Image 1 (tube, rainbow, N blue to C red):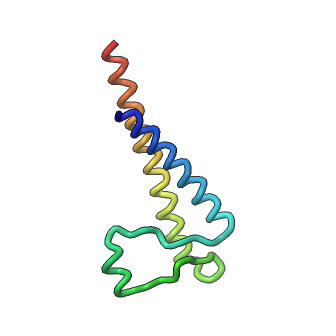
Image 2 (image 1 turned 180 degrees about the vertical axis):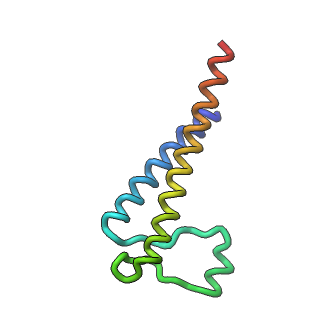
Length: 92
């Protein structure tokens, strides 16, 4: 079961990496999902998408968040996969 979760996380992370690369190439991205979205959306409502030409600083912050989340997802998936591999080797 954990091995399946690791495969799903790796696949999701690869999808997020491809999507972040596509957004970076075209120069337009959407606001990353925030954990405390309710508070921030009521106080400050940014546009649905940001372009690099219009606001390069905000675009950079959004893309940094997308890249970090994508690499973290792949990393956690690989870590789980490695742990499952060690456990299965010890059982044999």
